[in-house]
Length: 130
Image 1 (cartoon, one colour):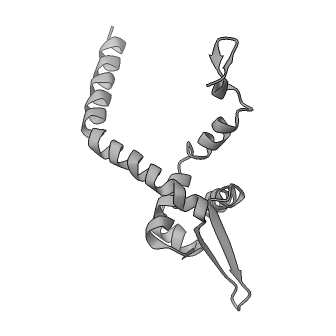
Image 2 (spheres, rainbow, N blue to C red):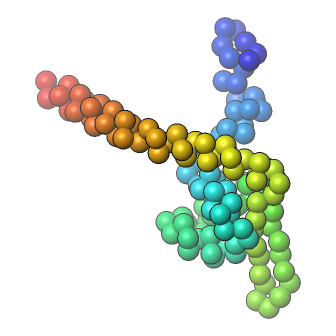
């Protein structure tokens, strides 16, 4: 890790690693990658329907971002009506095992995290009672 003024280089806004990690800090990117890893090719409407609570605009923005990073591919079929399908690229497929490891970690630690959140909230409530 590069040190700048005593800090790690990845803290800088211009750090490429930070820019990549920012992609997965949003609410939808990992969910869409995971969905496509299980379902293969999906149309826009199928992705929207499966996720359920994502707006059309946010889905469009997220798909474009994932496509610009090369994690998904978009296939346009000039039919009537036009058909567009999305699927993981090879780069996107290489990300899936890492997402699955993160998911497994989350499942293994969810009870502890839930208990910690509960204790934290109780502590916050007891502080505000004073």
